Length: 226
Image 1 (cartoon, rainbow, N blue to C red):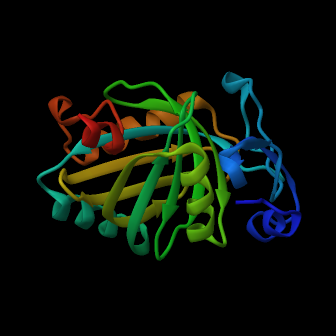
Image 2: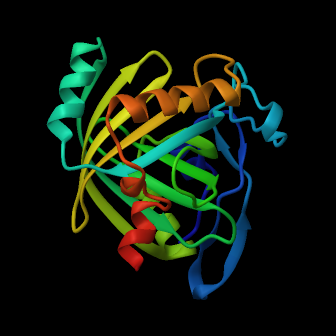
């Protein structure tokens, strides 16, 4: 499969660069296509002093994932406290084999993004340094990434998406795994310190009555691979 300049630009309109993949071409040989044009992507590698770039799409999340037996309670709390409901997204996350971090392509009726992130596996609030790129042609990109990197695992879920200010909430039902709640406090829209993001996560952890034993220290992809 030959990656032409026109194909690159149809997948990733003009912008900066993002190291993603090598592309499979004829005779099963590889050539590197490690600098692919995408919309205005910048990344500050000094994560402790990281702040969102005005034209970039690399950010910090402080995240909590937990099992829940009371999604209705969490939903009622969010609605009562003025959360903005973005809708229900039927998502398919395809994870690819990479040497560092995690790379996944998300396909949904609301969100379609290519996401690379580094995150420590630990219960409770954890920092995730990530780069996100909106994708206009996810099916074509999945074909290219699958051929060049190989698919690691596929996660399918029903996700209810809510926002309160800079904090994003997910009420998930994951195929083969069950019900979960996620809290993601992000500096994506404003310059917020890591300490403040952690405080926000702890606040909603308490508000949702999530117990310590319900906290999850790994991704859905890792859980499915176990």
